[in-house]
Length: 333
Ligand code: F6P
Ligand code: MN
Image 1: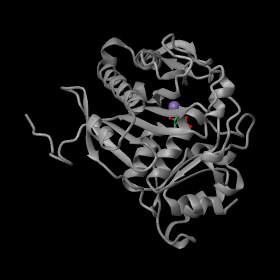
Image 2: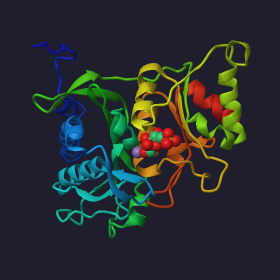
Image 3: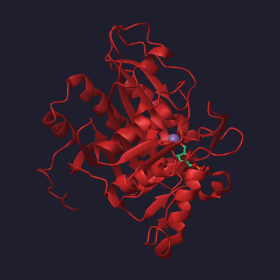
C-alpha cells in the first residue's frame, strides 16, 4: 500500500476547520458536505454497473434532462444537510422550490445553496463532474425563511466549496480568507489537506469558453476571444490555448492550477441574455473561491458578487479567473 504524502502534518478537513477557528455550526455544515461528497463519489464509481449514468426520463426546473445520478446526488445532499438544526433552508439545482427541512429551527442561521452534480452531461462519457456549495447566513431579524429571505442573504456569504470527482476526489474550500484543497481517502472517508493556500496565477495563456456559441457572442467577449486567438502576432503577443471540460467545476479547478479565464457569457440570441449558469449555486460560490485565491469574477463588467439575483434559479453571465485576463475582458466593455 502507498503511504500518504505527509503534508502539513497530515491534516484532515476537521483539523483544518479547527485551526481556522470555524464555529461548530459552520464546521458541521462543511463536514456534512464532505460526507455527502464521499457518498456521491462512491455512487459515481459504480454508476455504470447499474446504468445510473443514464437519463432519468424527466426534465428539471432548468429545462435540462436529469440523469439518474442528478437525483441520487440531490437526495444524498438533502439527506445529509437536513439533519442539521442550524440549516434553515436548502436551494438545490434539481428542485424548483426552497426546501425547508423538518429539523430546521426558526432561528437556524444558515441557508445552503448547492448544485448536487455539476456537469452531469459528462456522466455518459465518464468525464469529470462536481458538487458545488454556497453557505449564506440569514440577515437579522429572522422572518419566515422564504425566497425573499434567501435572496436577502446573498451579501452574507460565509463559505463556498466544490468537490471535483475526477481520478481523485478533491475538495476546494474557502471561508473567505484563503483557499485550501483536500483529497478524499476513500478507505476512511476522510478528506486530507493537500494545499493550504491556493492562489490563481495572475497571468495565464489559457481561456475556457464554449466556442460553439461564437456567433452569439456580444462585442466585448468576441473582442477578448479574438485577441487570444490572434496569438503571437496579435495584441497579446503570445499564443493561447483553449480548454472546455463542459463541467464548471472541472474548468474552474484548472484555474486554480494553471490560471486562465472561464467565461459563460450572455448570448445574443433569444433566451441567451443571462447566459446559462445559475447565480446562487454556481456563479456565486465560484466567485467567492476565485476572489479568495486572488482572482477576479465579473458579470458583464461589474463584480459578480455585487450582482443580486431575481430568483432562486436565476441565471447570470459569468467570467472569472486570473486577474489580468478578467480585467482585460472587462476593459472591452
Ligand atoms: O451546470 C451547467 C453546466 O453543465 C456547467 O457545469 C458547464 O460549465 C456548462 O453547463 C456547460 O455548458 P455547454 O453545454 O455550453 O457546454
Ligand atoms: Mn451545474
